[in-house]
Length: 113
Image (tube, rainbow, N blue to C red; front, top):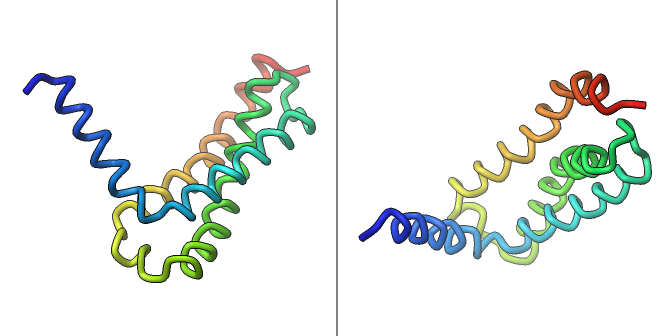
């Protein structure tokens, strides 16, 4: 097998592990899209791409919490069978706004009004 085949297998494994958590992933994505629009409208930095990123990043934890509730109602037990993937999503959703807070002054200085 080549390196590309290995990478494709890893990507396939990721999607297979994420599939049972579809409601959780979908809710996170929808919240991020709504957050993207709010960030663009609110414009905390004044640079559209970064404003949209901030909106999506700060919507991620809300998406995870709401998604976990929906997932547990729609497909009970899926989260307990996919603890590793739930942990990855939780860490990612928590890390995005933390990274945003840590870098806000940098982006504001670089691209701010």
